[in-house]
Image 1: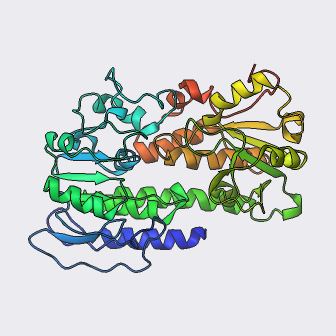
Image 2: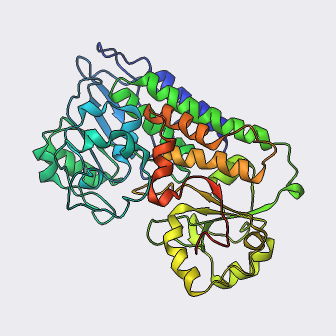
Image 3: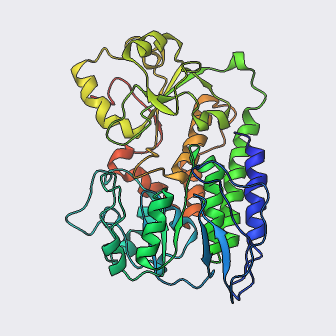
Length: 406
């Protein structure tokens, strides 16, 4: 992905949206192509004012909506990632309900992610615990629960159910706007993530906050890329990333050929050329075959709980892996738990760059970087709390392969 292009697109959207004022000045339309989560338009035009303070916008799945920016005081977020993205831009005091998965005060709720640090949940946990249920949430709940949403009496719904027909049907049933967000395959670095932040900024009159976040992400990516730009391909170590994919199902075979953090950091991917579509599993035989070429292994913390029992059964499973034998195995924080932890994905990119090119990033302290990023995303330095979660294993680190899975 061209990061300069992302910056120009995102800033164009946000600069246009900044024309919105809560006093009723019309804000511009934010568009994204239907049925996609990858694009934010290069050109943004002012919408026609539908009434006093009203604007017409297009959400991230191509649905036109008439909204009144800054008028909403009862917000409900539904679907994986919706509350997280709202937390980056919106006011948590406006929330009128929360999915059970995000309310840790409940005894009966989906708990599969409770050992994983979800920074938005850490930041908003006390608020979320006071709110009524707008649905169960979680990976097993793939349908919006209209009755529970109605019981929260929202005046707007922020959704991550990326289905046009279902969004239209839910909006008709609820009688309030349903604004659908999207992130895209490249997560925090994707044009769609920037578009979603800009859209939230327009809807809730938080344009400056949205612009700050988008600009920060872009500047961080640009700095990482610039630091590694002059490294010749032949001088780069081959790096294997594993443990990607869905929480609970991932292991050492789950990887990605086009891992966006590697692209941002200029990292040579050990599985390049295997034609893996998105995140996918390679065969055990292929892992063994590629083992000798893996100079560095980076393990996402999400996979530890699945790799540990496999390693207990067969402690020779990494014997052909060069990185394992040389002790070049590192742990990044789990970034995929009830969808993507966007700030964690950005912090992971810094860790990857520092791991692969230590001399170029010797000034980067991962605790300080984590605090810096979470401060911008969520208004709080959260490194200590993130690293204290059971499935963070103490934070970013080089793994002692002799004892870590012991």
